[in-house]
Length: 156
Image: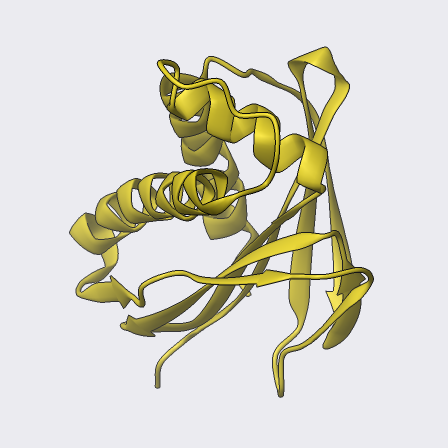
């Protein structure tokens, strides 16, 4: 996996997160996770196809999801992880990944993403077969944790 692309994806994502929620990414850490890992309460899963293939999975706590959904849906007070919060979080993932992929498509050729799949639960186990996962643990302002997990490869 090309670390230049990972860093470019992080930079784009930081800007898009701020534009869509007004949350700034104040810190981040990149780690290699292998093929199986445990994630937070909520996972937004996207498949990627085209000139690159793989998956991007955004994970967060329920508290983070509610805070992000509240920023997206400013006119409605969101206090629990209900249908409105689920839709908001899925759309948030679409916005962040969709805009980043658009930039990569302009440079690297055709890239497409699947609609988001939302998984919820405690200690979710994620397994990405035959690909190493790069985890980007972020801290947004107000000490809000958010994570992106990227497993992509160039098609041969």
